[in-house]
Image 1: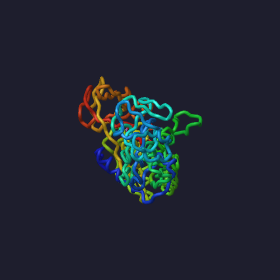
Image 2: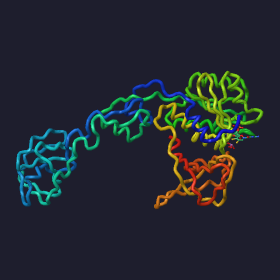
Image 3: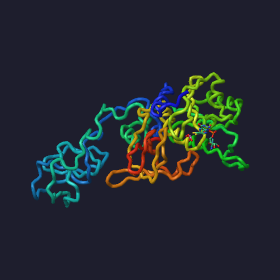
Image 4: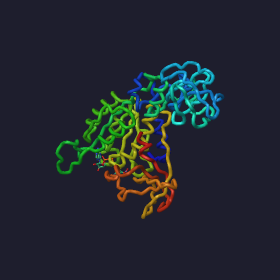
Length: 403
Ligand SMILES: Nc1nc2c(c(=O)[nH]1)N[C@H]1C(S)=C(S)[C@@H](COP(=O)(O)OP(=O)(O)OC[C@H]3O[C@@H](n4cnc5c(N)ncnc54)[C@H](O)[C@@H]3O)O[C@H]1N2
Ligand code: MOO
């Protein structure tokens, strides 16, 4: 199988899974991170009625002249229904109180004095001042959110303001993770000679969780067909999507792809023109997609971020599958020129003039885990192109690509 172009691989992976087929009901309070299954239409105008933006007094602007005083007809608190305003009068009101019929202007209390139920206005008001008009924020029947919207804090605020207690969301995508390799030990256990801790299992579980999918299993298999087959049987049975990590290159114990084929699955894509991440594979078994990530921890992290996250978003039913890419200036003492697209771990800094500078981590090896908490994202160096200091390059921010 030829090495595939990176962008082509990204779009093929993004289309490799099924869209959600069902929906379920979710309490709004528990909906953060869920995906809307149907568009949200405004149930009513917001605000539902004209109301005051200030603590003060409602008057009819036509009644105002310098030195005018107004008998205070009523005190109307937020949540109460005001009387109609009589000509020449004022009604005391508070932030959120409804504007009485016949009133059109609010004088804030700092601009007037009230003595013995009579109001004197000390500063000329502006006609219509401090009135929040019905429907100025949201109009009934307007489409507020599309199906596929990710529900974050702001969306929850908007839905609550429209009176939603429950909403229709897609079921959580079920993801299974399989790490492989005889040299690996689970964190918490003692480390023997020639062993290292399994960092990819927990890292991938955290990345899946951050995207709002459900981690159903995090399994580990030894480098044998039998161990891999047992794990695949469980994962394919219980999950919508399976991610494996390690054992996908050309070593004598790299058995992941061969095991999938032995089980009747198909390997649809293998090797992408990217660094790190070249040996990534995509397969299907029992109609379920399997992505086989390379074992080097940075390769697995970058491949998940750039190639697996779009597939997860597709299967979650999200409206937007590919997050935004921005651009920045590379700040680097060395130059880069590779035959693959190279993704450098960089830290972005933003200057007051709006420019972004991308500083690469000093060690770019695909096993250098210490670069990961340091980096804010990856900068893309195009294949077969000499790129160095001050060159503008594409930037994939983890803050956008890992949610
Ligand atoms: N002759 C060649 N050798 C390699 C090639 C190649 O094209 N020709 N490709 C290299 C590239 S690029 C990568 S990336 C790796 C990926 O190999 P595998 O996916 O088969 O991964 P492993 O060999 O199993 O492991 C690689 C490396 O990562 C460590 N590892 C694996 N899993 C974990 C884990 N869960 N937690 C922490 N560390 C893990 C493992 O110990 C190895 O050091 O292949 C190159 N080789
Ligand atoms: O993905 Mo490999 O990391 O290119 O070293």
